[in-house]
Length: 240
Image (cartoon, rainbow, N blue to C red; front, side, top):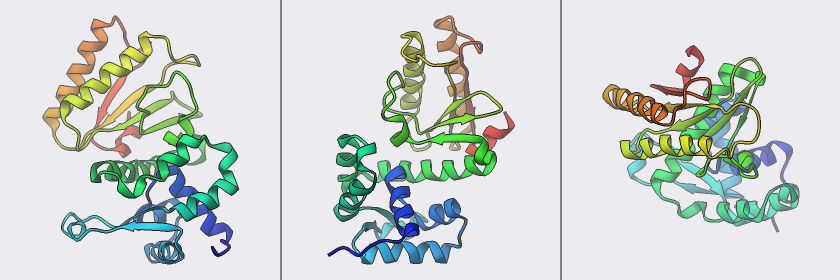
């Protein structure tokens, strides 16, 4: 029989539900605890069967830490706690997280890291939404953005993490945003700006800025509609 979880342990499972994977560093940053405390908390849940663990031999060479995901035991537990608030598709997706590609897992870990940075910048003055929270909204671009940020003091924006993607994938994403805007699918207030984070190459960032400007001009759109910003890191968003 599964052990009863305390509030802090339930909170960790809910955090993994939200971000799909947890690492020691990301959990420590989110909960403002030490890395040792985060590791211990994750390992207790792992040994109790609530979370699985991805840790390949190659991780050490790549400077990657273990990735923890929800097991079927945790999914069943959480469905009893918060299940009525989520569609079946969300639970079905989580049930497959043990077998996702390395690129997919790394992207989710990066999104959690980006969330931590943005929360450090905005604190409680912004609502930061993950795909889990955005999933029920109609009119939003698909596939869903990495994060949607709703500050109280400035314009709302989406965050797209493009490191590791081929440049043509990032360009395709730019076209999809423009199409989403042109189709009038976004039915709420003003369309959010889009921040594309790409640390890999200055030349590629320049190419993306140029491409976005050209496609916006072709669509007869300008900054009064929405804007693309290509930045080196998530932390740079605050300065723009």
